[in-house]
Length: 216
Image (cartoon, rainbow, N blue to C red):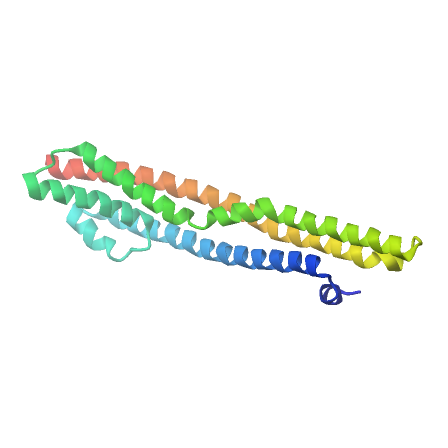
């Protein structure tokens, strides 16, 4: 019996388990590819924006350069800080509250981290529950196998083979859904920490630029 025949001849409960695991796996792979693209764009955009930021002579020049790198998380952090700087300068003519700028930068970092983390909880959920869904299908298949064995009245391989096959196939599908999701979640968690560290470092560079510009 090949895989397609096994799926076609599966009973309702094992079929439901297989369909559920297949849908979960497809959704997880969609998120994985999407996250790869997001983090790759974030890393590339950050690198380009950071070079422009370090070459700029003032906040206005950085603001103009930031328009070219809107996909970079560092740009969003810069925008939060720059808006607070502009608000203080327009109101008092100079900086009056550096702590408010630091808080604005932290808000920008938190917002960008939340954006980058979006849908990662689904990967964690998939990695956690898929083996158990597969295990449910496995147990159900074994129950079917023993039921068929009891009805056959003898230890016949023909009687138990379909149920055992469904059980093992459900196990395989559960692992096939869980393993990539777990690997991807751990990888993206590392990338998220890296992005958070980059944004924290950038906030310090931002504050240094602000102090140089308004103390001169």
